[in-house]
Amino acid sequence: MAALKLAIAGANAERGWARDTHIPALSAIPGIELYAVSARNQDIADVAAQNFGAAKAYGDSLEMARDPDVDIVAVLVKVPEHRAIVLAALEAGKHVYCEWPLGRDLEEAEELALAAKKAGVHVAVGLQGANSIAVRHAAKLVRQGAIGRPLSLRVVSSTAGWGTVAPPHYVYLQDRRNGATLATIAGGHTLAAVEEVVGAFAEVSARNSILLDTVEIIGTGEQVKRTCADHMLITGKHEGGCVSSVEIVGGVPIPLRFELRGTSGTLEISGHHPGGYQCGALTVRCTPEAEAQPLPAVPGLQEAPINVGQMWAQFEGDIRNGTHTVPDFDRAVRLTRLLDAIESASDAGRTVTLPS
Image 1 (cartoon, rainbow, N blue to C red):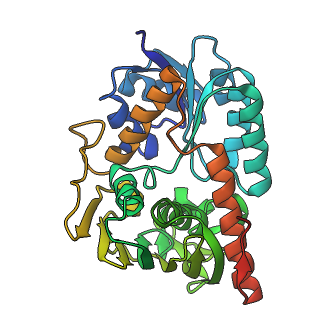
Image 2: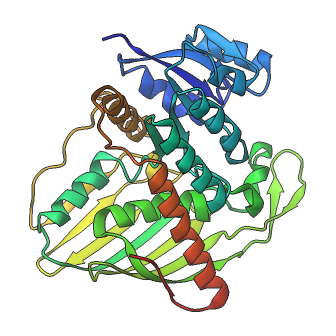
């Protein structure tokens, strides 16, 4: 079959998530052709197209999204820019892969999910960690009863971001109004994995804290006010009865701790990457010994591209076969609602019950 033509919004040959993860992952997937790229200006787009081997370069992402030759649009820009590009791509009938968080808030996420339904195309949201081979395998083992009934889960998930310093291009991450925060990024990715393995939260209590209210910008010494949490403590009960404690730590890149105890065994997921657990290779260990973890769908990838490659391989299969295996915009809406409930629980100092 002919390769699907992909357009990437947010391509930069010097730095960025597209360069570091999507480009290496896509180079190992022959069924998808990188056809076009866009950036904040034409010069950056031209350099990216030359370096990444794209046929077309756009200084306007909306124009690229409407290119009649494009099959899929990948939205890899900053969160405040997601909405306009996703809507343009959906209106043009393109399949859409949008990085997480889908929108700046619940209203935007719901708007984009509704637009995707109306467009009737395939969409994916970049919850690579929850969709990883390891996390899906752990969920399968739990469903099969490998450790009996899940009783309690302890998670400590960290990222180097939201520490004492930040590069200039990460200033926007300190302002909660932009929707790209420790809670939405590190928190959202982690909570998605938790729900994948032990099921949906039924109720949550939380304390979201700003422990460091200013951050120094590297290279300028400027002090920027931080308005989003840099530490989260969440306790919850899940629909199946399992209880969990989840700690999200900013500024301290430590190994992931994901420890699940059941009535007849234990299960652990381990991994380590400074950008967060979702960016690294993950390993499942189960006691008693259970079915071995499968190999990734895209062999030969290392570190951050592994989970992104898994998403792209499945998304291509979904488009070609009419299946729906990857996290979609509806999943993004549900996760955004959970994050809102956690914020409400923290603000009010009470337990919040979530709808079934």
